[in-house]
Length: 465
Ligand code: FES
Ligand SMILES: [Fe+2]
Image 1 (spheres, helix red, strand yellow):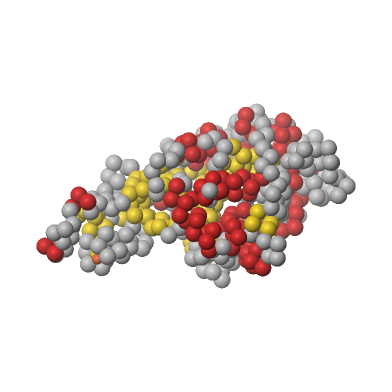
Image 2 (cartoon, rainbow, N blue to C red; image 1 turned 180 degrees about the vertical axis):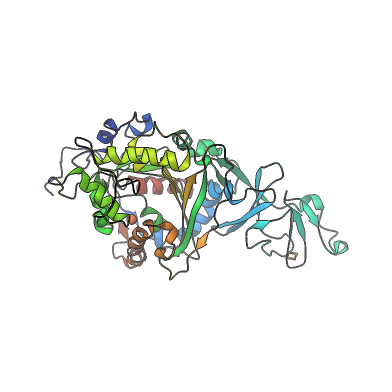
């Protein structure tokens, strides 16, 4: 209690010690304006009802009022690069065929036969004509009716009325979005200011190198919100504290739809007393976490194995190593990249469920969808890597779907991320169970470090209201 300052207005308190803004002032390169200026707004301290996560009625409201009216991240361009490629995207009770057209555009049709309602497709593929496997009604990939078998028996169906219902499609940064109901803001307006920020990081230059999914036994918002704050690192992921500024992280919001958690790496957590440790210790801890022995590494043997020169911080030394390493690996010139853009977790969220990381390192992208019921979430993790300049974007890898009993560590392509996710999985099913068992029917949020969660719920209420 001693460190509560009663004179501060609500939301004004910050962790003691070095802040994100301090770190940006001492970055090795000039920092873009949007990383320099705090964009925090206090939004109240009221508890949230647990029913938001546990009630089937609340989930039904989301399905009726929210999901059809938001831009949903449906696919990456590299999932369907060729004419006729399509993917099946399903969410919140709907199923869509997202289809690449001959002119390179993308259209999204409801994936339901207009005869007796069979799903037209259950898997991704390539087709110019979608023929229903039940009686053979078929549609062109433009959504126009192709054929009705036994046409004589359907004189009441007019060809021009038998087009597949279509959703709006928007594209930005290599991402394909769809919206069921027309009439809301265009995609660029909905995403703002994300496209402006990501104009530095250009996800349209990237392809999906890793894509892993799993159904997690917790509400989709419970799972997503575990990735919207970094302060649970202290108790849930203590092994990364020696090189993670968990409590130094910034939490900013813009408008209704976009927020970010900026977590500095290559600095020691304020929760650890490392005053007697040299900067080299931070590098060694980082290397140890990445599965390599700190005692046996040779300088230059891997990109992280740097010797921190006298008078230089581990952050600057690792930043410089990454600046060179990513330039060599991916062929882009990163000489102007800040340390923050090379090292840190710049975890953005776009309402409701799309979370791309900024920066120049291989970028993580999360998506969280409701699964079979209010108690389950389909969580997906992609890692995008940058394609060298002048080369075509290669087709992305397919989804590696883990079984419900498989740990994330069964996806070795996730590398050290998998063990961190497993620590999160150690909480999430029990959060869901606890919310259902709650006597108070309420949860409480931090004013600063959990502002993104409150921001999300306030926007959700605008749809549900
Ligand atoms: S349900 Fe599709 S053709 Fe009959
Ligand atoms: Fe976590």
